[in-house]
Image (cartoon, rainbow, N blue to C red; front, side):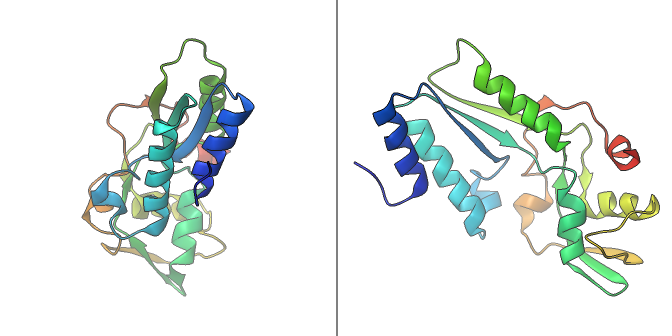
Length: 183
């Protein structure tokens, strides 16, 4: 029996084909109603996580913080001329390659629990605006934009503004933001 959403269909197909484990890459905080309240994408990730955690096939959900690349892409989209109006967002971004390695290790790890949740985050917590300012100070751009001023506004809600995207119990990657900037 298949559901009407992709996660249900994948779980059913995995069960029918005898797949030994489903690994779901998700977003840290997406399952928290304080974070996902107004965001369909985050709500969808929360539903996906729930479906896999209840599936007949064992599953591991990896909840990742945003990746370094998220900062210039996102702030670039909210830049107009000399000003960027970034969301008030406390985050701990990670190097995407380190997240990929972590997911690969999860996929190949022996002796996992039937349904488990793992989390990964970067080593530094700060606002997306401050990370964007650091990119600009290093001579970089924000999605092709080079605003002179980066301001913040709490348009994504308190959950995101207050660190709801940063998991408390998580593997912490080693690459710092400055190293990524220099690379």
